[in-house]
Image (cartoon, one colour):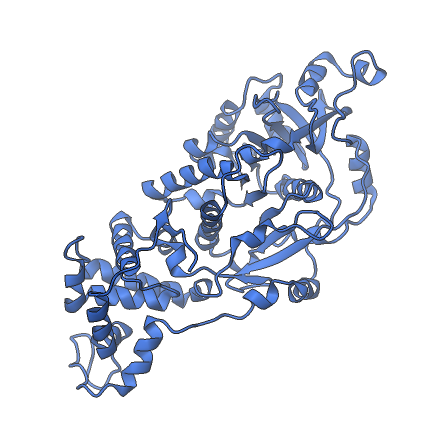
Length: 522
């Protein structure tokens, strides 16, 4: 369908075939500018290919929600939208939790089901693959490693990952503040552990007197949390080379937008980690991108899968930062679609900023399910449908849609049978995925981790050469035992010397904003 096609003009046979309520709904999707084709209108049990349901390209930075129960087709909806965005030259970011989206790089497979769906919705289906890059958090899994330095990740996001309470979160922020002011960049978790241990020591405690101290108990909780975090194999996510989020904004030589797929199957049992990392990517984009106003099309559309994990047990400060990021990143030309099961998974302040809605079927088997269903219905505009009945009766690949029109007003609620993706609806085999990663121009930049000299390495190198008497065993250290890492750090002569020098040097304060993420690349 061309950019300027809309519903059939009045008086034509196609228009006459539409029932009057359907014609009124379809007229709300008669856009004049470029738009993504979602599917065809469903009315009274019939699919009406003469009534296309679309979303204008110009409103995709107004954010959106893709919701629905497991197995209702949310993943295919993401794939469908990503394909069309890429074809329009818009880069896309997809979080692939289950490993189902890697097929976007390969042409789809023809078959009866695809042809039947295409015929029902008036789609001219042609198999096509799209330019894609595959990433993996910390290199765990199949993809180019995505890492962040502890300094740039910031205290608020790290506190969320570590499961710290509000008091511990504030203490962690104090540790970052000290390190920032003294020019002590925290590259990996070893650096943060070393600085925390020092500030909890008798010598280091004086450093924080002017800004409020760090209690030994709180420092102990933070250190134990870091140790447990590393024991779960998560240390590799923090370090260098740090991922540059500008690489998410690339286009292919043929002008199509690159689809960046973050492969998460290897860490799907660590939901808190990957959901927080996704928020770091958004915050980093916000910091680096210039203001764009209201562009004709977005610079990037970011699909945030398993969004409810981001908000579970989140502190007030964290939620405020999420809300502010979502509100402000629109002006940078970035659209964010949260993907989850029900709208109630998203806080009201965030949900209010999501102008585009694609709601797949909901299940209502329990009293809680019925309550969630009624709450979902209340979030939609007035509708010609019985939404409670409709939302429980939608089939796979069908959804209730309302979007912002070109004037910014919401479109009528439209039950929609969605188009079939043109790329492969399933994962690429492991060998093909690894080959695509090796061929990537980004592989050489990010594949090999770099552990440059930092506080921890300097301490470790200096410890065997110390000539001072070994520290007396503490109450927790029996004679003959190796001192713990905390004791090594605190009692290191090099660290004591470092503490004295940074106390007098001119600190280089790192500018932080929103989540406390670093704003300047170093």
